[in-house]
Length: 160
Image (cartoon, rainbow, N blue to C red; front, side, top):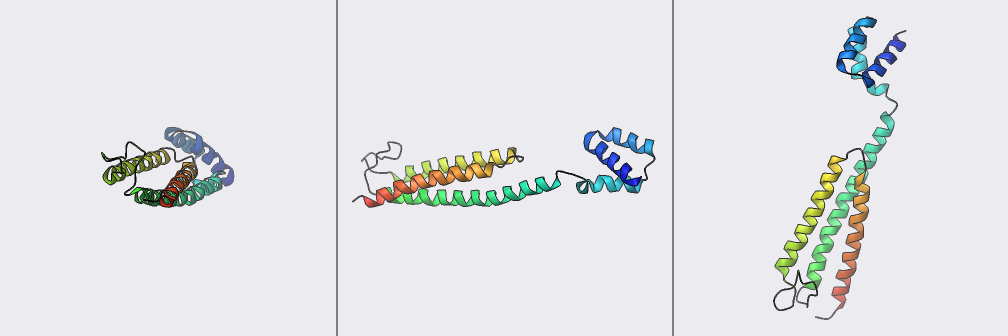
């Protein structure tokens, strides 16, 4: 009988408002101790507790990978800027008046783009906690880092 009451109380707790819960408790004459147990321990009755825990663990792992991919992105940007130092620059946003790379422009532009990208990804991940955006962001950051690494390697292969 108590199991039936606990189950009914849990179903009601999961699907109704606070007012309806107290009315249900008064009608059934449930003891306050049982009702408190249902309210405090409803995770034991939840069928979705394990999938939620798995999602949280996956998000945690992908968040760590996302942080690592962003660290790699920052390092590759530094190598890209260093590989262009003293050389003729084709990008007009990074080029100085003499046609060579302007390191101050390169650093500020790369920092602004990287910081903006990080801020947007962080805001999207925080806003949608029910989805695992860290996985997508990790793949995207890794792809961009790989492309920049190829460009930096090409720049290092060129003669000054």
